[in-house]
Image 1 (cartoon, rainbow, N blue to C red):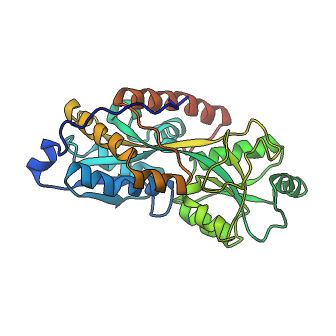
Image 2: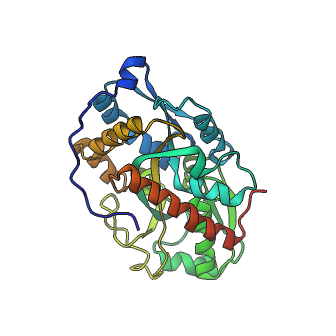
Image 3: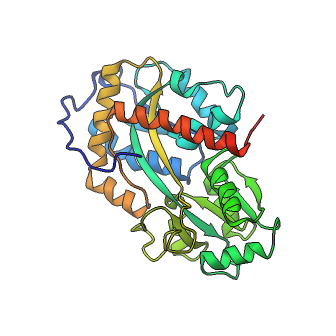
Length: 319
């Protein structure tokens, strides 16, 4: 479990890390997805606050493709100086090594954990034209059409893919997986009635749900979220035990000096308690979990083990 209590944060001893000031260069935050999805939301959630705290520009570089591997490999090949960071998605971090014989990187060897950005409960969103308004009605609709409904994802082996497969198993109805290169294009096809369902982070779907362009049927978490207060949990909606969450976190290339990692971690935790960051997180339906470097490392290693096991047990592979 992720730590759920908020810890008192130590004062930030060095507001501007010496490594960044001396270089006079911006920090590049690489995002392995296109704009509009949960990973991109996490990066932009912190961008302005980190720029103020660190005193140097934080520039976002979206590098989608190859199920996140293009971005991840570009970061691990970067100089370990703290000037190139990765906004990592837990589905890529634990999923790719479990699905691929050789993804070209190792999560425990090639990446250094820096800090948690946010934790995202997932919602079950369906196409607006479907004649359903509740999760139970959608389940009944799917049962009457086995193998005829599609569910989208941000890529093979993503948490959306795994969640869709587990949902299909939970309701006992086969569904067809349609992978995309990110949550945003998948959501566009749900809104356009080309795909029936997507289980994804609310940050990428709240605006569409509020506008009635997709239907939000349930939140796959223990509690409702403020961004969609009228949407029940899966337990309330009649599917107890079906919960899905993901995390998004900052990583640096392995070998980045410990003092640099610690300074960046302190800045991330300071950003996480800024009122504007907290407000935007709540509106986006994500939870802020300021973690130390050691805590982030423990979370990441546990995810590699547990999500990897789930993927292998489900027989999901990209090879």
